[in-house]
Each structure stands twice: as structure tokens, then as C-alpha cells.
Length: 422
Image (tube, rainbow, N blue to C red; front, side, top):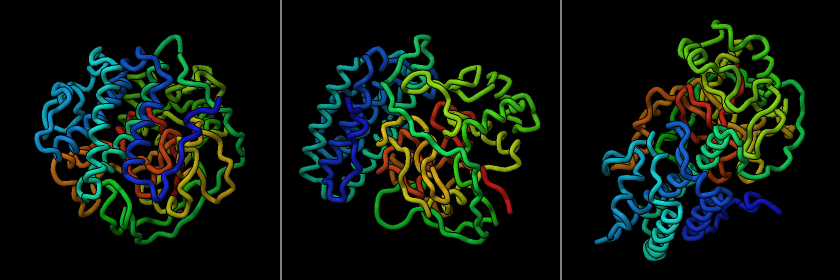
């Protein structure tokens, strides 16, 4: 049977807002379809949310910011949901504590599906009547991009949930990954200077991608591909996790407190890894994934290199086609490189750690009102990642896209490539 994932398509330029709304909203339900109701209520760590919470939260977003704000006299479907499914928007009200989402046995999965249907009916009526209004169209587009982010989280969160279960359930059977090349990585050199980076022009982008501005970069080299499992295994076998000289101070503390000895989903013998399709042999030429910034940085020091800055990464990404092992391939796991391009795997496979702290660009202005809480207030103590992963949709990623995680995070598809001064 052909996986539903493989039937996902890139958006048409002529795709209407109604069609886009339906397509993206339906995808959330398709991603949850392989799961039993019992799977959808579990929370293993504070960073992971139950599937049913994701399904409800993205729906709350449309009800809160579109229906309630644009329909006079709108009556909430259930006012209690405004508290349960608010994530971090303090300016619109209180919220249920994030680490406790897994204790919410009610509302049930069935009730949340009903909630989605009722909000969708109201939203589709609103789009048909007023979807040509610029302000509303922007809010709906933002909400759909927000849902795409949570669709990725549905996959990464259930992976952690299944890994934490001693029965090691599978999300679904995964396709056989392609064979890749084991050739050595090459270095792509760029002359230093002042370059324009950031988003500009038409098309959707988040406020944290703007404004376009000048950035100064040194002469540098960046690896043509991602760091592989084989190379990372060499680091482990060379005592990478036992030598403090490789590690940032906070990273060394995490290594010892958490007893890190390998990437999150690797077996102790370094031969297998847990995937959304269950345990399988590690592919040596596939990108290493589920490593923290601390691990990526330690590997770079061991290798006599460093992580690229986000500016260096974006300059390289502008010269590559915006495709790769993204959600549409259906692999749902990082895969070996099959491209012969001079620089590869900039999009898909793994989010790439950079050396850049998540900070505002010069002249940054958050979205007005409560939605200004979406990005700006997180610009502290986190690190920029770029490029999307095997769980990111093709129409959701672009060269200027900035995501961000805490340095210790590992449950996402997180990997890296190396850079060097020259």
C-alpha cells in the first residue's frame, strides 16, 4: 500500500486559500491517523506534547486569532479550551502548564476531532466571505504555517514517546532508504565581505527572518555535506564523550549529569538506531541526527573545525535548490546523500545547528499585538538552526527560515555540517 505521505504534493501557485486551508488542516489528521487514542495522550518530557494537544492547539490558534477577532458576537465552542490549549500567549490569557499536558485525559481525542470540525466549518465560511481582506488573509496564512510547524512536532514527539515505551512501537513502516556515496566531504570556499541576508520581497516569511540587512563574514570554508553517522561514530570511539577538552563547560556538565554517550536514539553498541519505523541498522553514510548543540560543537573541536554561522549557512543555501529529503519523500528519517551537486543536503534530512545565538536582526520589528509573542520573546539563550528536516514540508522551508532550540535539545531531527576559517 502506498503511504499517504507520498501523496502529499507541493502547493500550486494558483491554489486558493480555501484549498490550502483544507489541505494543511487535513494533513494534521492524516499524520495522526496511524496512532491509537492511547498514543495521543502521552507526554514523556516537558518539550514533548501529546498528539491530541497539538491537534487542539493549532485549532485554538484559528479560533482565537481569526474567529474570535473577526466575527462580531462569536461564541467560543468551549471557553475552557482557551485555557487548556493556549501555549505561550500571555497577552490573551492564562494557560495550562506545559509540563502537565500529558495528564489531560479530557477532552478526549474524539472531542478534539469534533472541535476541529466545528472550527473548520466556521473558518471556511469566513475565508469564503472575507478571505480577500489582507489582514485576515495574513492571519490565516500565519496560522497555516504555524500548523505546519506542529505537524513536524507531531512526528518528532511521537518518535520520543515510542522510544520511551519498552515495547518500542512503530509509527508506520518506512521505505527502504537510498544508498549513498561514501566519498570524503569537500570544502566549499567563500571570500569574506559584506553580504545581504534575511527575507525580502513577496511570499510569506516570519518576522524573525527580517529585515534584510548587511552582514560581515570572514573568508571561510563550509563542508559540502552533512556530518555522517560513520564520522560521528569515529568521534565516539576516540573517546569523544570522555574528554572534557572537546566540550563547552555547560555541555560537559550535561554529558555527565545525563550520562550522554551517543546520539539520543542510538543503541549502546552503536550499531542500531530507533526510527519512526522501529529499530534498524545505522546507515554509515546517512547524516547523524538527534544530537545537541553541545555534541555538534564538541565534534567540531575534535575535528579541528567549527560550526558555520547562520549567515555562512544562508549564503550557501541561496545557491542550492530548495529541495531534498523533506516530508514529501516519505522516508521520515535522514538519508545518505545521492546528489552530485557541489554542496548538498542544505534542505531536509536534519535541522543544522549553527554557531549563531538566536537574536533579532538589526531593525527587527515583531508582529503587532499578541502575535508579536510568536518569535521575539524567545530571542535569548537559544541557538539558530537552519534548513528543515525530513519532517518539514517543502512549501514551508526557504533560505531565510530561522528556527531555534536550546543547546541541550536532542529530540528533534538535529544535525550539523562543519566550517573552517581560511
